[in-house]
Length: 208
Image (tube, rainbow, N blue to C red; front, side):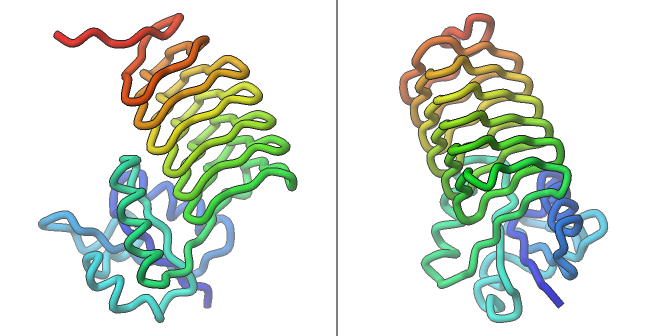
């Protein structure tokens, strides 16, 4: 029996579990560090916290961090890697991933998503439902491309950046590290590290 452990018993975690089950994982168990965690996350049991997972790594064929927050996912994955965990890559059977694309360990590609030729998705990436990553894009560690977002060809995205629901990024644009692109934004120019950009064309959000 193929056994997968997921760290992060959230709504996002349920979607990851569903994709994993659809792609052939037979037993899926959750672990979660939140106080007062439930005994189940939807259809799947919650077995304990992250410390319990580290103690039980040998029981699982692979693990994956199912936390939507980019920085938290990156931190948890690094802890698991340091402990020698085997990190899964989960691709929903209704996704399309080019044989010439590269997906880093701990990446998940959801239903309806497309990752095209010579695209590179770094470790702990999320290509969410219906999102597209076109040719020659390079996504660093822990990038989250949210549902229905579209990256045109040759886009570069720095680590721990978030591309919001329905956002569009023009070809050749560079997006820095720890960037937040707002839902529905249209990014046509370079975005510097640490910015939140919104609107069409996307502009930095002004602090109140």
